[in-house]
Image (tube, rainbow over all chains, first blue to last red; front, top):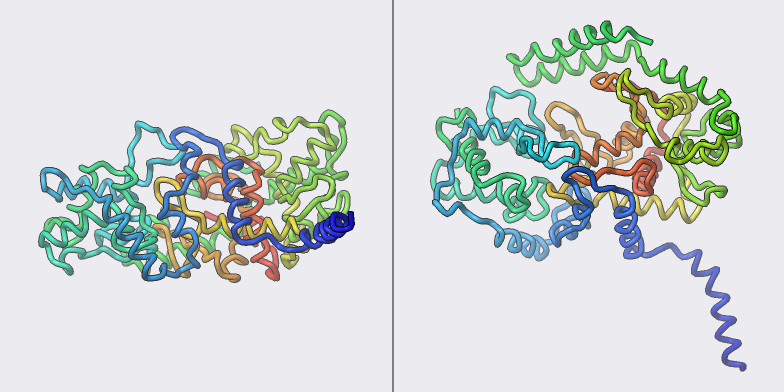
Length: 207
Length: 272
């Protein structure tokens, strides 16, 4: 068959040409996903399900370094995450700032090498300055020294601080900060304690 | 071998230098750490790993009792000089892109007759309790690229694909903390606590970081390889456990090594 032969000739001609064409971005992305799944093993509390991204993670993984998402994308992500925030039923947002300081110092928790029954911290000092006494602080996040002294001690600021710790992406899409409440890293009481570290007038953060 | 108690007291003395300025201002702390890092450069115990690695490279080992001098690291069988500066690369005999460590495991299995399980049994040493042969071999082989400009090729389609996959993975955010490599290594001048973080999205950052691994880690008393570097980053990212020599580890290594092209390789280094 004349037609059939010409089709097969075209087919043969396309094979080497196809090899020379670089894979598309989508092809590379799906290869990366499959490769990640094959490159890790579940250990301790860290299962392979941790490689499954939610929508926020998927969208935020597409960003160029140091770039914020486009306005419409950011609004969508923030709305999605704002809806996850659960404020305490008792209405009290401030716990004990001294416990909050311990949680801010604690770097353990959720690693495959961590004891499941062991402490889980927020490791705030890894990225933020907080109390002036602690000089070993990181700079990935902004300084939080004098957090409430500068912003006021009122109910709105308390709500913002609690909500930001619960789910940072509700206020800044694709934040580098973990979503401590949404992803169940910290308990409600722990979030109250860290909120107190930022908001309590007696906290060294506000001295 | 260094006397471990002597090494311990030396470490305590140096750590005290860091601890004392806790009453001083932040700027002084950073200065003191800079002094500490400078002091470290005086002597590097990595040389002990390099010497042991050279012996292991030349010894007849494995079920077939042959040395790794049969192993082709990309520049021909037994050629060590400059080989690391061109890795990772595609190896036709394995039909796979490999970094140094996967290549060593491949040679140990295919040539020396080790089982894969045995070859990968102890990739990371644990102080004096358990020494890693691979860490020693890596120390030796990488030391033979010191001063050689990084020159990683993407000419083979599998090399080019690995680079692009590695780049995707660098930006992949996941796990309970939403962390990806980019979270800590995407901006200039950032720190975790007092530890400076290289910006690996820029050529200068990738060059400075990649050319100074492997490194003797003072805090661990061990020489650590690039596979270890990735393994422990992912642990802290709260990801599951990275498999030794996995394709993801090679893809990320390819992304970073290629970005370091042009810079003179300068390791084994010494780091805190």
